[in-house]
Length: 395
Image (cartoon, rainbow, N blue to C red; front, side, top):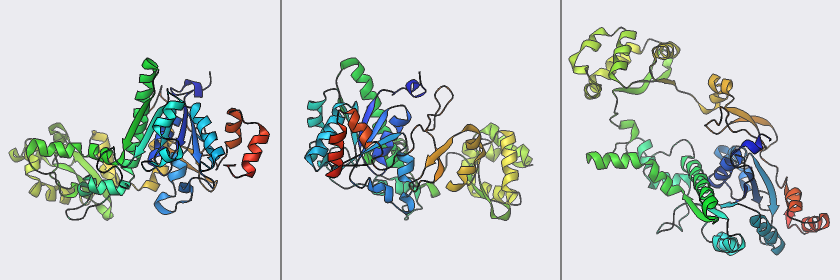
């Protein structure tokens, strides 16, 4: 048995009609877990390959463990090839605007007739309802779904620093596909799964919605929130360095005071409990900031780590390439970039029998597997060549 065969979704075929982040994330997760994921690209390839700036890393990180086939779906022969692929598939995923796949003849109803056991995963901006025809982006739903309000300062909404809804929306699409596979084992029937950016964002806001339900008080944006813990903040220390420090229990408070020579605060009845310390933040935090200001961030980190107290350096994304924990655990794996150079990318953040799912296939070149896949569908070499000459396929 090969290593691929040991993965839970080995033998599952996924045909992916997707681009950008949300759809490819769904396929990446299934591919990392062993599925054969076939990415159907238009002539010239997925436009995501050519993005600049913040989008320049999208394609390599979200399209590993996939094969690429280029088909012109607007030509009958290209559509026929796509339908043959779908007939051989367990899962089809897509993240186009509502109605696009139906117009192409690749909508859920048509594909269910072709393949009754098919699981159809749609990744959209909104679930069906009044908003479903709006054009959604991660930033759009962060603004309308409360996340930008909670992230920014009062009066200054700010999107989160990652494509959180795209990535988690793709993740929930994959979870839905997994659930549908489990159901199909019992019933033999396929299922239509839908995941969305907006509803994902609302799910992320549930804790703040429930805070209001519980207290009647609206949640304040994170920079001005009243924390549940007294010491739970970023400290600026010697040389302008910054470090996040937290003391979240009465036991930790005693340890903190002993470690940093603060017996008077440890004995102060006004600071006896965590809630007392939260109410005392106005005068307590300035004193703690002054007390720690002359220490270096590394010195504070060493004390906190030795005493089992929560802390974190303020790290930039590019610094994670050299993170000693990720280096030791193998949490970063070699990945081929769009220009052919090699870098490293994070693996899925869990282990199975002690190992994180690996990168078995590098992000594919445009149409890299077109001929191989068409041959597997029964196309003769001469047919494939004629399709290439007519620009129905690309390789």
